[in-house]
Length: 182
Picture 1 (spheres, rainbow, N blue to C red):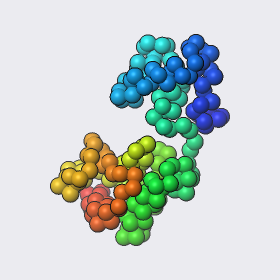
Picture 2: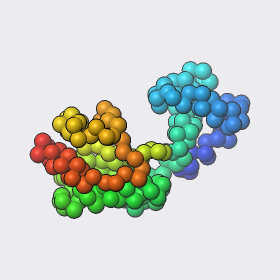
Picture 3: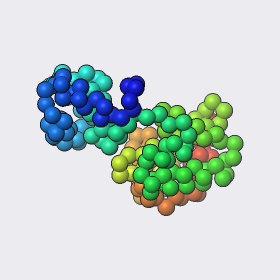
Picture 4: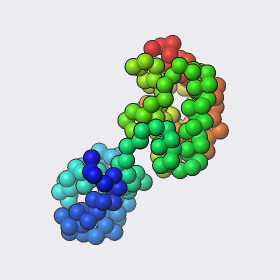
C-alpha cells in the first residue's frame, strides 16, 4: 500500500508516465465505465501499458473510492462513507446484534463483518449509490429468494438503497439461517 492512502497521490506519476493529463484519463474511464473492474484493468494495461498500481488507483478513484485507507472499527468505516449510508449500516448491525449478542463486529477485507468464533456470518459494503449486504453462506440467498424480490440480488450479495428502512426481521432470519447452517 502506498504511504499516502489518497488514490489521487498517484496522479502526478500517471500523468508523467503515460503522457496525458488526468482529465484525459477520466475521459477514458467514462468511456469504459460500464465494464467490470477486471475488464477495465485489462483495457488500461493492454491499450496504455498501465501498471497494476496505477490502473487500480485510476479505476477505484473513478468509481468513487478515493482512498485506500484501512479501517479499524465500524466508527472508522462509518466516518468515511456517506452519512445516510453510515446511519443505515449502523442500523443493520444494531438490528442483528440486538438478537445475536454473541456475534463479534470486526473489520475484514476493509469492511464491517459479523463473526462467531472464527466463522464469518454476515457482511456489509457500500458503493456510491447503494449498500450491499451479504450473508456469508450464498445458499441463504436462494433460501430467502422469495423474500428478496424487492431487491437486486447479485451472486453473493443483496443490493439495498442507501437510505434503506432496515428490515430487522429479514436480517435476523437470514443470520439465524446462516448460524443454523454453519
